[in-house]
Image 1 (cartoon, rainbow, N blue to C red):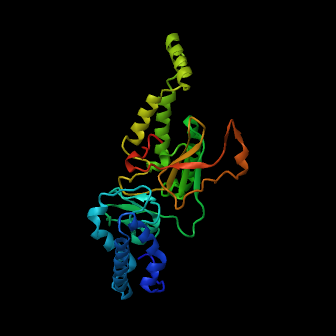
Image 2 (image 1 turned 135 degrees about the vertical axis):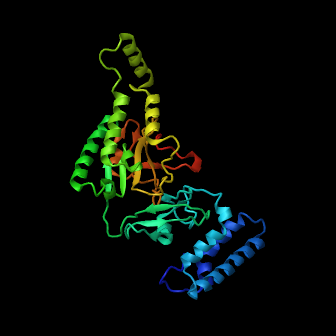
Image 3 (image 1 turned 180 degrees about the vertical axis):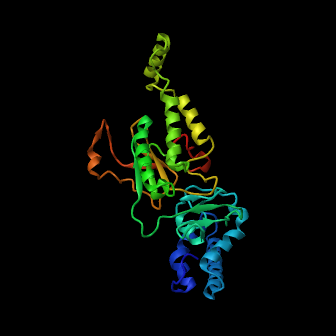
Length: 341
């Protein structure tokens, strides 16, 4: 019923189906049914059903969105078993951007269609129940306002250098005051350090956690006063592993901070979604650029994106700068954890 949005002209229903949907439906059911006549009959049944539902909308008994949500609720016993991180199951048309607490993913358009305005303000939308599983799936999100400009935070650094942008954010928070969180000023955050946004921490708490983290990881290694053989062993390990610091200690500390079970594209335990976050990374083999993100994006980048850039001819040994790829596993159970990203 997406073809009949509010205040739109009521085109003849069967004409809409035959022009927009029939070819796609026939192609899909042909792959399921061995008989072409059976596939044809199934498409005709879909067309008849669409006309019946259109009459309910046309007479003003309900909106197209209400009709669509009722259809989803009727099939909840089937939708309950399905999960996808690449397709919004509410509309089957777009990539999902958010995940409800029931673990069903939803696109931003469907949030605006089925969500209600939260008491906090007109820019905050809330979903209190999931139509797919008929369960208490919750979500509270503030989509980017139509009148807002581009609000992106890019954090450079990595390792102990992450303290520098933290200091800048702390100064910005001091200017804003305690009533307005610096995190609420941005729609997207990119960089190698993103705990501030993934965990919904305030800047002061993030700085304390970061200070404790770096002292545990970097503070005790190769310090003065250690025995010769201990230092020799550490140097030898650095030479073998191409790293001066223990990856086991790093993994353990990351798990302590971010937990061991929450994925980067996952539902927030409280159902509250902050800004979109992407963590930059490269492969060890050829330094190809990748993004670990808690969103999908409304469109897919073309494979040629970046190849025509002035930077495309910059040499990296035998490799060239050819843009980046987003990490999104086809199986929702194999999504990377936050501590891994």
